[in-house]
Image (cartoon, rainbow, N blue to C red; front, side, top):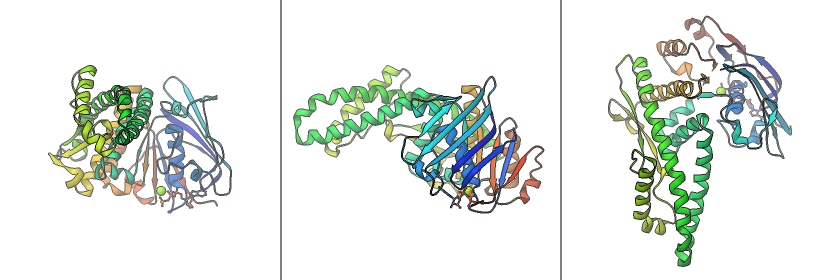
Length: 364
Ligand code: ATP
Ligand code: MG
């Protein structure tokens, strides 16, 4: 899919902006703090309904204004798509897809498909497991709206169970209701586990292939799903093994007042030539592995939805050597790409044939 245009009113540092996009490559060039990332952020918002930089919608509204408006128009293989968001300082945000107001904001997923790659994504490899869970969750949610729903439910049930565990410590009578939460946790948790396992099984060969190409076959990337539950072939058998783990950990769960087993403790193992690069990778290895994973995600979304997602590259081109930059552009012939950069010179080296270049200067 690709986006044809973007309209912003009172979004971040923009008063009123309309941009028509090139179907392939769009480059935003400008000095620091001019509003380049703000544009990518607004595009991302039309895909996920939230920012990749902040959880506070209020920050997205222009200083001293009460409302912000973001709209994109794009083309998919068989349909046109229009997504519009209205953010308000005092009210819940309102989202419209093809003119219809959504009742649940999560319904925005599965309309505009976006993959972002920014320096932040280094975190994906080197920070704690929660960053990697977030990566897995975001990607599956984009392809499967049900997954996002189950994840939200799981987190709610987990919180309820943890509250109950704390209560039981004071009043044993609450023990009677624990099994109710356990059953819900097992059912929802097993759904997450099975989906995550499937996702990692599919992204592993894709990312390995891409990684081999980028590193000229010098590096062998492997990602592994790491969970404290034994994943079995069937849903039922996996749920049973989760059930056993939950039983075994009851004493310790009660002591701690929190649930110590389940998919909320999952991780993604990332290995290069069998070395765990979460702890032992060089900056370059971590960056390249994150890039390989992101590019694999593009293929996965295409396979799952029939549409190529849009790729947002924020400040990453200058961090890759020229061969890797060229590889990236060549490998993504069918993908609409949005690039931000402070350097215009290297664009000539890249030998792009078709692109729009936007010069971004803070108009405020
Ligand atoms: P860099 O090259 O450093 O990454 P950039 O061009 O990507 O810079 P952005 O992050 O897109 O910069 O924009 C930052 C600018 O937007 C700053 O000048 C900041 O003050 C301004 N800005 C951010 N939020 C708001 C807001 N809510 N209202 C008005 N201006 C804002
Ligand atoms: Mg920026």
